[in-house]
Length: 139
Image (spheres, rainbow, N blue to C red):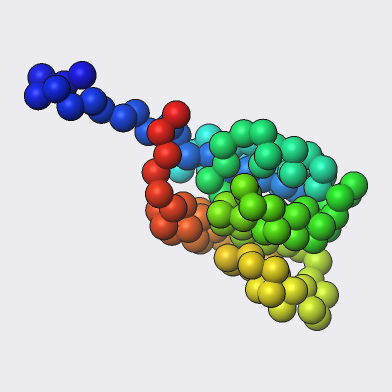
């Protein structure tokens, strides 16, 4: 309680969930977002991405489309169709791009589609913009 009788709400650190099958990519992205002040969780496959998003507070998902197990496409589609998870902004950050991938992502409700390689600074800036548009949540 503050002296005036008002309660202060402690905001939790914003969480970025990185789903990528490549360990080096997970490490590079984790380090970039941690340096930018975010907490980072990682998943190596689509099943892990969905499990993490469903069981932990997540403010943004960065997903490679070509994940093993549940594919990145399947994981993103499930996120965007789930009543409890669809509010989480998603950035598709992918290496292999087929002709219809970007169109599919837009139609699936993905907020941004970024092709690798891309500047980490630019990726963090886009993530920051998407996270800032979300209401802050207390622990």
